[in-house]
Amino acid sequence: SLGYRLFSSDWQSIDKHGTVLRNDKIPALFFESTAPTPEALSAGFPVVGVFHDYDIARHGVSWLAESLAAWKAAGVARFISLRELAAYLGAEIDGRLFDDRMEIALDIARTADMTESPASRFFRQHPMQLDVTLPARTAVSRILLDGNGGPPLPFAPSGNGIRLWLPPFETRTSREITVLFTSAP
Figure 1 (spheres, helix red, strand yellow):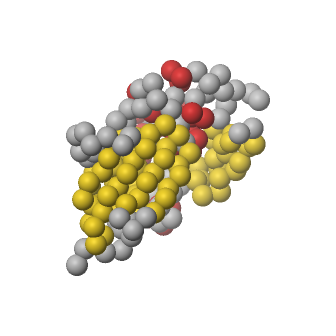
Figure 2: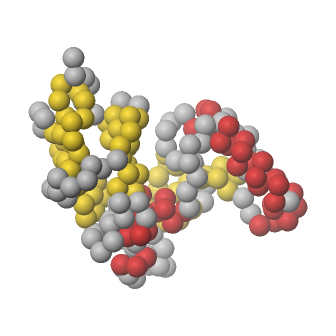
């Protein structure tokens, strides 16, 4: 292996347990030649915006600021680095649904660089945003992190569910989230 987990070109590919997988759902769009349109974002998957240093040299820094503003106006909600994208794509998520709760297990052990250095895991030092789709006609009553009834985990409504912000994993490689819900009228 060359030491990379994410390969970014026209499409994104990621190393998963020694197998390189191409993800056709995450295209790379060149800022210089692709106009921002809602259609480019309609699938709901990330889009990798591409520009080169010579684009900035040729068009100026204001061109980059204008390009980012145009994509934001077209509906991009958030810009992240390729390192953060690789961490999201490398994380393993397992969910189980019960009558009164949803249990979500997150594992970031394979989000490090190829040396497996814990310090290279993005979510070790950064919060993780997670969108969770809930069953129809339910309302969240409480969210537990790692089986702990400590301070509530922040969340907000998002589409057909909720958006969670998990604190940095620090020295952990996994987290358990339990979303308790009740039937809504």
